[in-house]
Image (cartoon, rainbow, N blue to C red; front, side):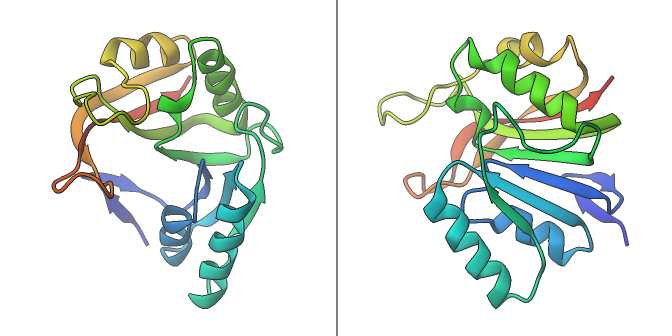
Amino acid sequence: MTLVKNREMVQPSIVLDVGCGTGENAIFFAQNKFTVSGLDLAIEAIDQARSKAEERNVRVDFRVGDALALNFKASTFGYVTDSGLFHTFNDAQRPLFRDEIARVLKTGGIYFMMCFSDKEPTNWGGPRRVSKEEIDETFSPRFKINYIRDELFATKIHEKGGRAYLTSATKL
């Protein structure tokens, strides 16, 4: 089975959903024949994710852990997904995060990331906004940037979604 995600063909493989929260994306991948691990720092979120996976009868290896020190073997994953984590890191943490993602991805593996865009207004607060240049500067040393494109990030406070960037990058 092949999954079409944002107009890209994705073959089932091993996926890490880093910053998985309550597990919706990880569960989605598991329901579509991927082998999935989900990692989040919040114990409560992981507890909820485990409950959801059990209710939906899917298997996901949910773990509590730090995205800046991933407790996975090198070259384990074909894909890493990040929906709303990268924009939480400060400038010093970003290269650490990039290096951890590169370490756990296989060569040729793909990192998909959604983060709040610098085009998103700051009047409501929320997380740090990120520019295309910051994404490119952070990941280019270890990844080929396939694209950085405008998207909308579903949130509880945005009627139509917050302005975001969707990034696809292949590990060199």
